[in-house]
Length: 211
Image (cartoon, rainbow, N blue to C red; front, side, top):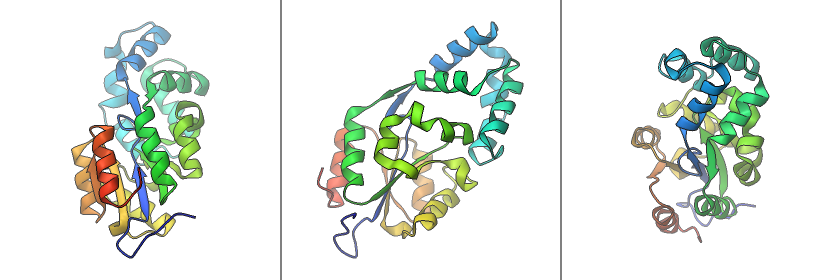
């Protein structure tokens, strides 16, 4: 059982994934897609990541892994299967052992979940792309698309807190983007802008975590 020390204690901890628990290299993905398609990034990068399509996917539209993959292939202009997409996404990522160790320690002392801005195909791919995080968070490894909103929208924070029955004011959120910190704070959460493991360790200790 999570250890809830007193009425002021944090009962729920939310971790971002990319650039917090994992290194994230978009250029690795671009290079892989260029090799796959035989075409330059200018033929697909804008259509996928700068057109609003990926942003909508992170908020739940399209709503299934299959629909996401179909939309991705259409904008890529080339067939791609789920296994190839997943392998490319996994190749972009490198685990950060120190940050993952802090997440594991926090999860032993409070309820904890992963919340990453991503679409439903990544939800299906998390066991391959982020097995270390899934080991820590289990079924509470979430993408924003599951909640019909994406960070920094305060609704995504309120909805995940409601799903697990936690008061936002007793929820601690960790992310590397200032705008997401602002959104979390607008929803009433305690938030920490991640920069280094030592900084996160100090923030957790200030909230009475033993790390």
